[in-house]
Length: 326
Image 1 (spheres, rainbow, N blue to C red):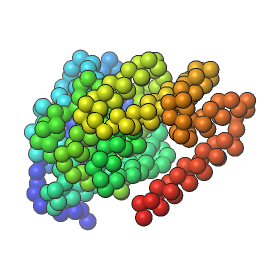
Image 2: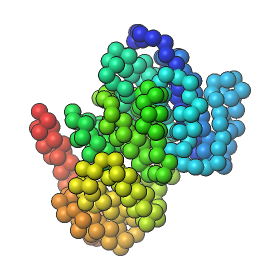
Image 3: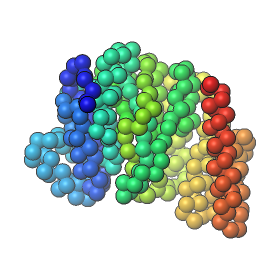
């Protein structure tokens, strides 16, 4: 049985897309299959050069979506464009290669309407591969204290949240939408600003399927200087809004070096990977993942033993976190 909603408020669903013609129809269909039906779907085509518009023609012709094309300006601008055009009391975001479970909106609306102290609701996600196969459930560890959650977003420990958001449109406008100066982690900064002013409810049940693509912005190899500049811009903006975060900068930049090292390793460039993992260790010597990556790079054979060590270290870390929160 479906969940009874107190009011039938309009929900504006904003879908930014860029060269995702292979998946965008699936994303839209997952919205159309929602058990909650009072929705409008706004697709912002951020300068696609593939056949995205042709794929969307049937939805446009049948009035199922509102389609807008703009020159390529990045996901922050695309989401803001959708926000400007949205007519609903509530807004939700969905990336064009992700999927919603059928009761996503219905479950979130019940919470937000019965609990007016919450201005936004997010959930965990099921991670899928390019073919839609389920890989694992990503569970964010949401703290009770606002400052702790802001720190966790800053450090990149709370991720994959954007396609799970349901929130009041006025709240998104009040915090200024997504910061268009940021090419990376604009979604983290957006949620940090909301957390600073309002309560956010986290649902442990996954309501979204998040697709991991080999060619996606977050997974593809990029120029390391570009990554550093993008992340440092994010850190600087965070420090301006939340000065206490400067105390965590060493750890944050260490994780950035670690990320770059992993991308180099994925691209087969071991020497460059080793250089950046050493920078990671030098910047924040107690970030344990860097040491295991260092050993992994130096191992002359593909060691399953090291992979098992990392697995059990993660398991131990999770047990320690649970014990502290108990």
